[in-house]
Length: 238
View 1 (cartoon, rainbow, N blue to C red):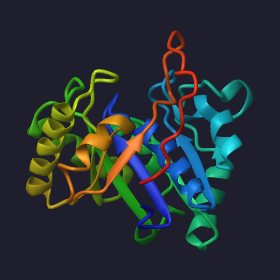
View 2: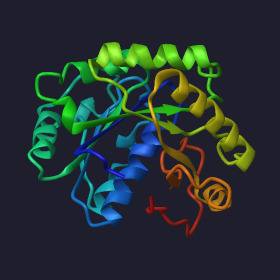
View 3: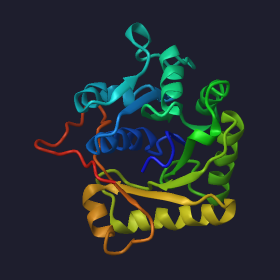
View 4: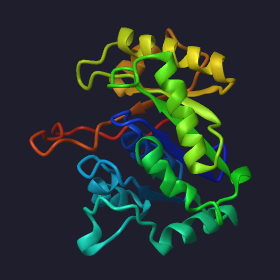
């Protein structure tokens, strides 16, 4: 994990990139790394990493997002602290994660940071979930990659297979998504960096999939009517 000082999660609506960003940050803290997570998601106001701000801060993750009345805003804003976090990471003082909004609209916010963000310090991870609308074909996924690259002015450097059906996810669900991600990799030349799944599914995958690093995740960003399981524990090992 953390191949570069800055890790950027981008992808289509509902791909699970915010959940990945949160779990990635917590995994970094479990390894005693200094980690900053910046919420740049301006597209989906109800499923953003800022909604678990308390969990992140409790774990020691430095968290950057708009405050006050702008906390729930659905606006393309970049607060000065984001630029500071990027510069701090590029100077070698921390590891910064950027959670970017879906499709090219969200990626434009990332493009607005091109004056400070140096590509050689950034790993751009495109999250693939083929169970989401408009992301279930090779052509749609390829178009999304190109849109994000154009809007962000950065090249996608890695793919994350994250196909799931929430709590109904099975090993077969994940493997189907991994097959599609590998096909996208073959088409683009972009390597598959990780495969992500709920921790219980990852345990089953470990004896099947040995070529790609697995990210076991816990769901933190839940709908208001869904409560976290009592006694659940964060999965912080990547």
